[in-house]
Length: 213
Image (cartoon, rainbow, N blue to C red; front, side):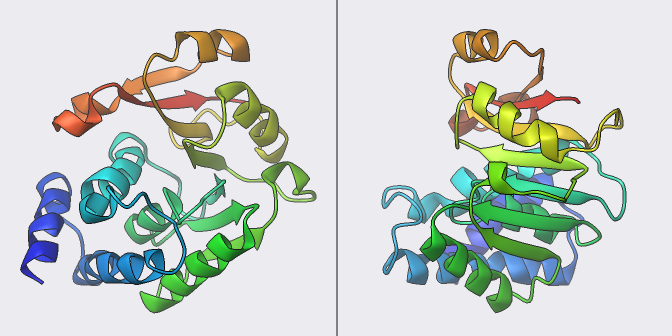
């Protein structure tokens, strides 16, 4: 419990105005993820003890950098263990999140974790994002799923066109030297340095990329 409290202090250091419910939901994540990770490999074993920094706070860099219109619908492409979708859904209770992954057992875990913390503003889907039809989203988010060129190919048909407000388009978390990846995509993303948002050593060479329709 003390360790969880200390980890949560890393979150509240940057987000001091979280509600009691949000804090309770965030505090519940560690035990739930550790339990599920012992059954299904969702998170690297070396990362599980740093879940709040490496996964939750990393996901919430999007919340620190962007604002979304109330009622916006957000697609999480290749959500894996629920990142960045679950932390963002906790932070933005007035938004709707649709978490998609091609691996069925991961989607079942994400659904179970959301239910376990009473998170009711998400839906889940087992499948590939490029197979989604007859549905449009205000924004798409993603973390370490595929090269930018592929992500943009998948996301672009699913996004409402012509939106220019801050929280729209494809918003993805990336790391390292992105010059080749951006050049191959042929698009012109806005690039935000996460280390400038969260000055923790872990976030050096980690970025948020936004591509608008």
